[in-house]
Amino acid sequence: MTNIIANMRRDWPHMPDAALLRLAEKLEPVTMCRRQLLVEAGRRCPWAYFIENGITRSYWLVDGEQITTSFTIEGSIVFSMDELYYDRPSEEYVETLEDSDGFRILVEDLRQLFAADLDLANWGRIIHQNEYRRLHRSHKERLTLPAAERYEAFRQQFPEVCRRAKLGYIASYLGITLPTLSRLRRNRRI
Image 1 (cartoon, rainbow, N blue to C red):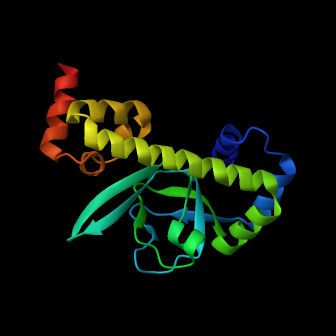
Image 2 (cartoon, one colour; image 1 turned 120 degrees about the vertical axis):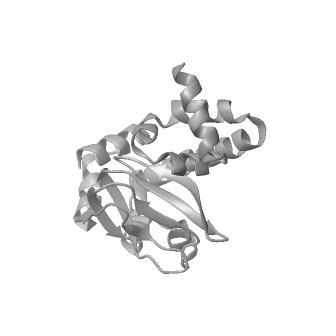
C-alpha cells in the first residue's frame, strides 16, 4: 500500500496510523486486467478501488461514443459517486488502462469509516475538493483556452497520463480530435 498511503498522507498529512489500520482491515487485495470495467453505467457497483499500481480512466457513453471524463494513477481511489452519495447506479464507466493491482472496499464500509473516523472523513473531503477543483478547471479550460493551451495545461497537470494513456483518450478528455492532438504533439517537438 505504499503508493496509496503516500497519496493519502499527501492529501491529509495528519492521517494517523490508527486510521490507516482501520481502513486496511476493510480492504481486500485485487488484481485487475487491462481494460477491466470497475464501474459500469446503469449498474450498481458496491466497491471502491484503491489503485496501488496502474492507471484508470472514467468515461461516459454518448451516442455510442466514449467521452473521457478523468484519469487516475497510482495511489488514487476510484468509485461510483452515484453509488457512494446517492445509493443509485453509476452514470459513467471506469476501466483500467493497463494491468493494475490494488485493493477494494465495500462502498458501505467506506461510508461507515467516513462516519466513524474524522481523519478518514477529512481525507475523503480533501479528495472530493481536489476532484471538484479539477473538474472546474477542466470545464473552464475547455470553454476558454485554445486547443494548444488546453493540451499544455493537461500535460503539466497529468504527465504520467501523457506517457501511458492512448492519445485518443487524451483527445477525448480535451475535447479535440485525435489529428489535432497529434499535430499539437508534433509541433511541440519541432
